[in-house]
Image (cartoon, rainbow, N blue to C red; front, top):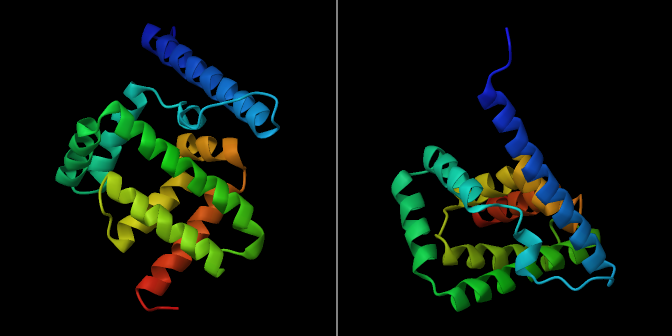
Length: 175
């Protein structure tokens, strides 16, 4: 039996996406080494509008669909300047986490960064503690999100998952 044309098309789309990720990783490495200037927004540009929509649908299955719709509406209501500000505010959080990694996931410095990240989520929606942990676990478990974090540092997604786990346990009074 011959492969279907849709299989070929899907493979081509995946190849294009992989090429975009590789290009973004290369640009990020050059940026981090000081060879190339890269906007903070560009650090997370590997997700197309179509992919963002796919992740919104996936989130609607995992969480309350109304929360996801409200989050999407909230984002769409921001002006271009507000969106740029939000992106510029968010990226340093991840860079700060990388810098603080040697101190450990349970260090006061890392936990303060996690709290900043939690407050940053308010731009999109205010997750409860279980949702916050699921989000951090998704950053590590989902290959697309992990690849995006790997551009910054290959240890970041796993470290963030652990740091958020510590944060959630402390907020629940479990440790």
